[in-house]
Image (cartoon, rainbow, N blue to C red; front, side, top):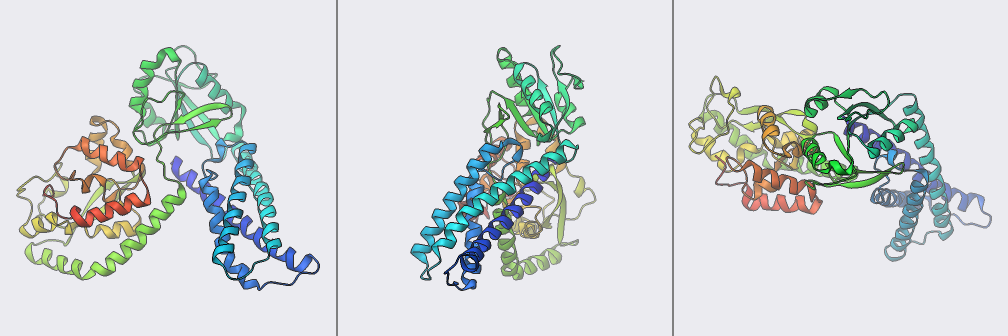
Length: 457
């Protein structure tokens, strides 16, 4: 998947940057106290402790200045400017912290040496890494496949940029709807665009039409909007379901129209919070879960847990755990309907744990494992997802993030047998406006009104 490739690049860049930052910090100490004459050594352990602060500060500003987005869309001058800007920000922030919050005096010369060297070494490291990745892409490694949709000057300019710059790591695998103007020897396709995307499995879909094809291009964009692949428009943007961002691809403006706003650092932070919270919750709630498990076993013959295939981030399938709330039936796993009010399949105790959401507690194991998040769109069964994708616009966009135990739709009452379209609206609002504080708000509301719900049958 496209997202997995970018994640590996992100990890590689973070490791390389971290090594460079720490090397600069300790090298500045060495120069100040072992090379420059007339110096008196500060305790080394102070610099070791401060190195953690220095590293976190710098990584924060590098991330804030977009230096961990795809390197394919940075020219060397823009990257140089952002690295220098991040160096200045982290330096000033470090000076303020040391001045106001540290009693121990730290050599100002060593800090100044660090500020100069870290900027220099980071530029060298990032240019080197960029060139290394560029060489690998020229050799046909770590490529992203691109499907072009449309025709006209803009899409020709984009294709020309890809052709002239093999270091971009993009490979055009086909063109749909060339309208008699095919691009070079690119394979041509026609028919149902969604079937073509399903067949070719591109990493990126690029849509571009002349201005007088505006109305038709909107129809194509509407069809492609909720693809799990990255979708790029050249250059019009008619939708704002999740979010958009404009970048410069070698002087060709391109616009992503179906991307989440979460950075990789935010995703890592969210994952660590999920892990720690679910682990603590499992420890605290273990007596309750044992009691519920015993009562499920006593009140109805059959297994304690109920497992079912569900869909999460990137369309991946996982096995979701719940306490069994229905009587064991031969065809239960093949049912294609939601539960409804007074559903005869539900046991008496099952009705209680469903109404109080106690049946959801085993999903904490799914969160701990990483299949789910504490907060996100509720996961759905694969057969229902396949149906809803064709019935509800933008439904697939829910799978841009991990499925959650609770979510913005659930705490607002949109769960169970309620309007699916309204649920999708709330899910997409959550994805578009995600923040850590928003997650905290949903967790708080879940405890206040999310567990017991009139629509939880």
